[in-house]
Length: 310
Ligand SMILES: C[S@@+](CC[C@H](N)C(=O)[O-])C[C@H]1O[C@@H](n2cnc3c(N)ncnc32)[C@H](O)[C@@H]1O
Image (cartoon, rainbow, N blue to C red; front, top):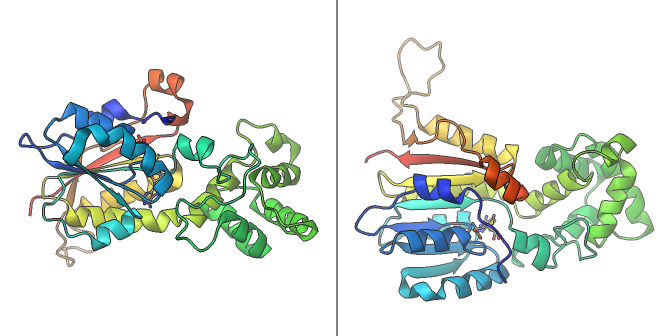
């Protein structure tokens, strides 16, 4: 069943245009293939390689894309490893990253991504990862837990929450998403408990990022995508929280400069050459209609860059 609505779809289609003779799109985060299907429909000669770490979500994508026949190839892989090991016979013209997880994961995976569900606290996109969220929650010391919540969730009550987790798990291991959410709710000040977002939102985000090594994947994946991309080709990244968006912004900005010497150097010593051009100097955000229709899109930001000519 398709439950995920692709975000910033019209904007992605407008900014990522394949060459007229066909072209190749790598959708590095295929999910339920909402973006992929729209690109294949819009450009009848476009070929697609769809990548996802998650075998279960990929089955829903496979069924959805079956009608496109041999225009589509699907690869179950982490995108950092995919780009590192891929030596395409043909360089992609476009790469799309739509980061994070999809509505499928919250509603249908049964892996504890939602704090209101009595599901095992797993959060792994793929079983090839050795540690699930429950392993981090029950096996890390208070300092390590607080560090995860602070770094990956920017959670201001990280220390309070970590201390409460350590106390509660000594009674019984925390094994479900619903129990962890209860523990967090009990740890934070009442004003935070009744705030705009659920008090466990940031902690759940942090654990998911830590379990799936999302920031390392992003760093290696982006570098790998630009390495294999055809000159003049474009990479689009849709991110959903400030940690990701800040990283993408900096990655694009640093590589769009010729010289990266400190400003006090009178002449350039690095001899740097720009690797890409910014297509979106400012991040593109969903319009009012999309935000109203799909509240999950509210934090989305799309940035696009073009690989410099060889
Ligand atoms: C936001 S969803 C993509 C939704 C998709 N654009 C659509 O319209 O259905 C992100 C997808 O990327 C996958 N994913 C996240 N990190 C990944 C990584 N490092 N490597 C491969 N897939 C990843 C998740 O499993 C998820 O299916």
